[in-house]
Length: 484
Ligand SMILES: [Zn+2]
Image (cartoon, rainbow, N blue to C red; front, side, top):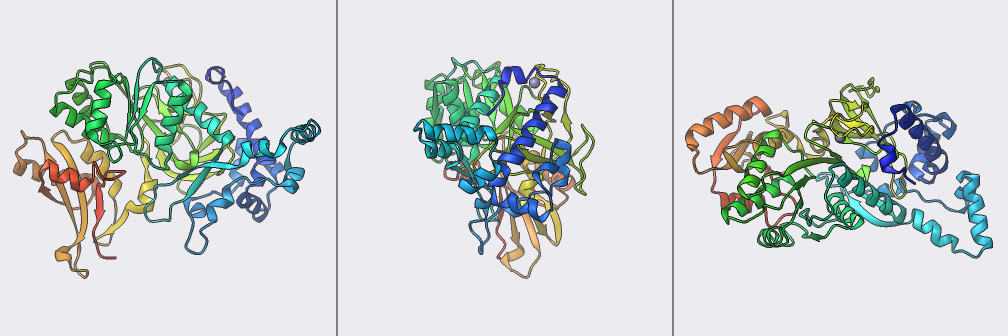
């Protein structure tokens, strides 16, 4: 199933590579053929499982992309093709001798074989990807997977040396998404006293603040944008959050500027020695990876997955070089993907032991550019040019003078035949001279995002309700208001 984490994190590089080869070989031979999609892909590519012996051989296999996975109007059941679905015939063909013997033995001794197979393979839990243009894609977990998810959650908290006696507040929005459930399962596995708030839409910011203060929470887990909102409200009400030690972020990229703004608020709330930890995750990866400190990079689980980095042409780059992250599962059931193009760009993967914690597992360098979101809904043609709207997030959330922001793309005068225009509404801090700031901000946006934007002032409460801080699962930062 999985390695002993404390041992795994001390393995030398060669031993980790050998382990990954062994796991990949077995996964490809004995599990991947249970997925209708990959059975077909191997056939189409004229590959047999024997062609893939090491992780280097993976390059023979075509990539899987979001488009392969996503359901279409014609074929809504497409994601099911990625679920491992063994039946008697397939088991006879692909199971190991050991597995077959075990099944035979279970039958002889009158054990419930069906139940055991269901435990390992039957989907019992589902997440959806958050894509906005494609139909939601289901990604499933079996009971076996849930054990692995708990284990990986345990690992995450271990990497940041969490004190289990602290109380945790899970502030992720309640929904069938990875963030909420991973946090939930991790906290349960670790035996940490915790409250699953469901986020602002479910429990409301007032009650979440009451909980952090009243339970003297030491661990708070949030989407960065919403966390900033909660902390700002708490400062306004002069709350005492002095027990907060660990702030764990997920769901969005965190810019250094945003991190500074959050730290400043935490200090005002009495949390003097708190640390902020960021995570990297994707639905198809079924778990998340965390940094042990700000610069460490994301610590991977080499017994559960294999990451490679490829260039624009799809060629694997040498170790440590930048490119796009490509993910392959090594030990999951339910839905699985191999050579999945994440669309996320990395500066490279580090294979040397972590200089901060000494763990030897590979690490994805900290600055990950998430182009996957762009592909789905942010690579928008404004005035006929492709604009990476994702660049608004790190830029605007990191600016000191700004409280909140929202960008709207609209047609001039609401006329469908007119040109596109971008409006950026901002709520500024009270000390800011808006007129001066506006010119500076417009220039900054032009420099960073490469598009002219009209900046308009908005009061904080109005903007908060436009962003949907208390009413939406995820804050609405970019609105495309153009007629379709
Ligand atoms: Zn580390």
